[in-house]
Length: 143
Image (cartoon, rainbow, N blue to C red):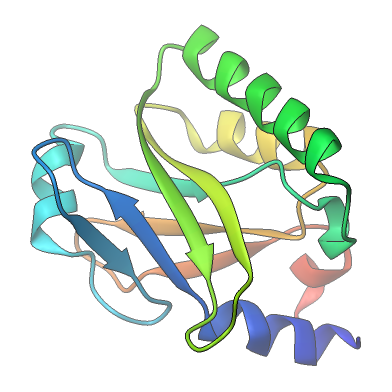
């Protein structure tokens, strides 16, 4: 898949976050941060939706993906971040990718995690701006 098509695919996804009191909030690229997540962020200037599944968008075995996600969870916790569970999905498709919505990290730490787990992109959600994709590698070069 070419980079522009991959970017469009990521942009079409829904990024669901499980809320602490029940229910969920959905991040969508180009849309504002849902109020429930803005409240949860507290003093954090942004939240990041990140996964360790399927590095570089290459399908991996369930065993590989679960182990990588457990390592990501451990790394996020060791950084002192707050987190909520999430799942990325494409409406109308069966694909689901477990993820984390994290707050309390510096952007350099988030970038480091994304690179460590070989992700093409993450979702950044700022309190007062549209939710955006943040690309890495070739996808970060203006796909």
